[in-house]
Image 1 (tube, rainbow, N blue to C red):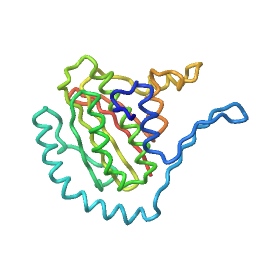
Image 2 (cartoon, one colour):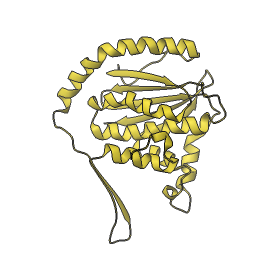
Image 3 (cartoon, rainbow, N blue to C red):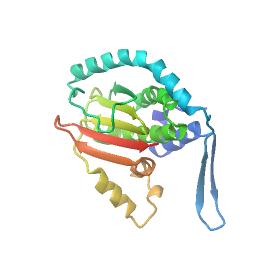
Length: 228
């Protein structure tokens, strides 16, 4: 019987996401005494035409989503987009979601992210969904561990030509992501064998760039970048 993501132990949630998204998944011992994780995913070749068609399909719905996103930002005291610049050119698609500090909201976040698989290569979407799940889980479990459940977490996904950016805003204490990642990678034991910190390693490995910075409105913004 399948379990909801929030009911799974933290160490098994990533495996559940991987098994659900991949067409073929195996983990085998090799003759040279290494372990090999093999992930297979089938895809169509008419990707460019699908992007054009799907972008138009979601344009109308994003007008409504954009209005409610603006309303929620005002209600929750979140930052405005009016001062945001785009050094990589105008976005092809942009969408956002605001949820409470609850692990059960992860399924809603994944449902929100799901339509973007029609706009980017499936392998990129799968990798970024995994990183998004880890980033949101970290915000709930760590950044907001002492904050009320009503504390908002804002998530935004922006697609540029050949680039996907995901931003997760939380209201926790500042955290040096890069220093922690270096610390984990310099450990004498395999960091993947440790439950604590494994999610950070997945994020650093799957994304092309991950940063965690303090904003002027006293929030933290985790930026996840994937090029394709």
